[in-house]
Image 1 (cartoon, one colour):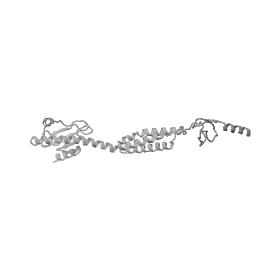
Image 2 (tube, helix red, strand yellow):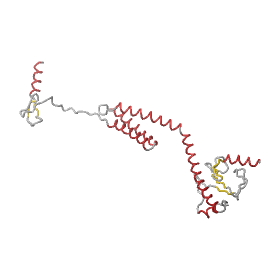
Image 3 (cartoon, rainbow, N blue to C red):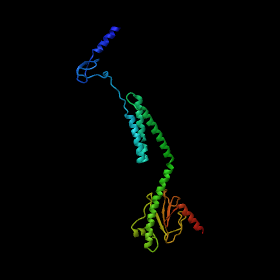
Image 4 (cartoon, one colour):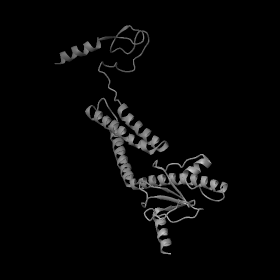
Amino acid sequence: MSSRLGIQEKSNNTQEMLCPCCGGTILRQAVQCGCGARFVGQPLDEIPIKVQRLGPAMTSVALLALVVTASLVATKWLAFAAVVVIWSAWRAVRLARRDAEWYGGYKTAVATLSLTIAASAALAAYGIAHIPQALENYQLRQIAATEAAMHHVANLLEEYQLANGGAYPRTVQELKKETGESLPADYWDRSIKYESGFAARADRSIGNTPMSANNFELRSAGPDGIVGTDDDIVMRDGIIFTSSSVKNHSAVQQQH
């Protein structure tokens, strides 16, 4: 047994290699080469060195940072891009599980995935809870746009009144002939109705009451598109009323 070990040790001592400095042939166990180069460690073997790839995990982290920044700077709707972050983090987790020797960053990928899912769930709950408020704000913007159009018409009517002895035009055609402008549409692209004191008539279904020549009414049918319902937008002599308040005022006048 000892003779075999001696033969193997002798074989290793006599194995030759190339000097990395001069390229000459030297024994593997030599301390230095004839060129003067000294060895500071054993030569590397031919087994390949595996370096873990952190790209997938770091990509998910970078995507998360990008989505958060874009949502804060540009618009919150970009938060929906979190779906891409979740997919990227889940891919990194799968790669690290399948081949941990080649792919690293498992804990980082898991943390990114968990954080993104939790944040997405919180944002979804927040969005659902604020849907009624968002719808109400949208309706208020519709009404505000219609009221702005009415105020523009009211300014035209005031100019007409000053130029025509204090009376408003009988019809829309007279106003257009004087100012060169037609009545604008409301937010829902429906015509705004105009009625002057000359043409006023009592109509309980609409809520009109008799008006003098110095009065006018502008009316939008509102979101439902039906004239005479409670969502009508009414302007009388430059003042905005709700349809219900106009009806109540009409009922009081009729009782007196």
